[in-house]
Image (cartoon, rainbow, N blue to C red):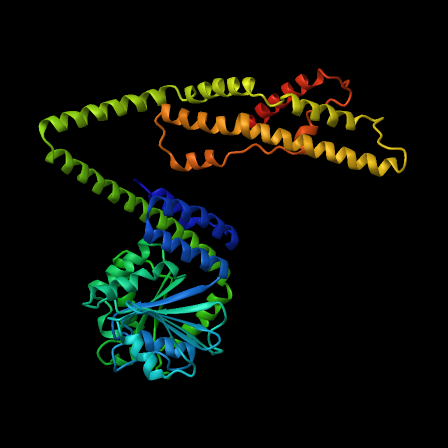
Length: 485
């Protein structure tokens, strides 16, 4: 399936949808993915819906182990919360937000664990480094450096030899509005950096490259401007597009080529426009989720085909002939249904007409109640000599209620039960095995109330013993009306 044109439209579209509308559209997509059984993409959709409704802006720090991701995050929030060099950094996804202090740790075996405040930083950092037992750490910390509605993701090193670390790093990217891709000064032009950033381009992620630890640069070996130009050319030659490139050092703030202040300043501008960026990134990620689902569906279909082929290969010649014959029968039945899509409705209409014509909605007792009800609607209807207004209204209400309840009971007895049986039998004739449709039929009902019946009444009709037949016909007609609407 060629999706390049659709992707190009998503990338260059200037349409900014309100976040609530995006969330509503995603909810409909999520229902379809859930119905198909695509668990992973359903989960992503649910997280994107929550992100859009809460207007949560996320920037994710990705890169090599020991590239300085955690140190950079500590610098940005103004406090050493995450473990940093010389100890190896986070081995799982760590989410950080500003707010009332709490720490929640999602363990792989034990579930959610909460750390009581004030928590030990040493204990917190041990959880951040435990990639074997810990799946996710979420930290809420009071800080003025991080505005409300903004989260930072610290991810495991993408060059980890542990496959789970790389998977964890990539699994959180759908939530990121911006990726800060950090590289060690000495390992910028490595193959894995090009591969990972190319993948980010493919996912339509906005990327800022951060070349960290520039305090290692030796000007006597190569002028810094030449080094900067060389790095920019390397990524351009690889066909990788980035939205920003910063050369930083968190160890030497006074370094002449340190872009740390420029990075912080641009992040501040980015966050001020967060609603715009969230809308764009959610829209792009929705497209990515749909594409991933298409691939998932193709893979699922491929596995089913292989299973069926294996089943056919393992059967004997006679079984194989029977299966092929049955497949031919099913194809014929399907072709017949496709050739005459109106036959189902036409035959059902005939059966329904016959049912309604023969339904005895107005037996003698109900006709008497109808006559009394119609009589109460006449302009000259009066009851009693003392306080005729009140007594007339009470009598009219009593007649109305008795008539409505009688018609309701007759509808259940003569129409409702038979209609459901007829509908289900009709499905069986056409070999329709849709359980949701059957459940809908079981709960099918025609609402009959005073307004429903009153619409059928001809106020100018003469009240007579023969009027019940007209009412009977009118009631049957009303079911035709209700059915068509």
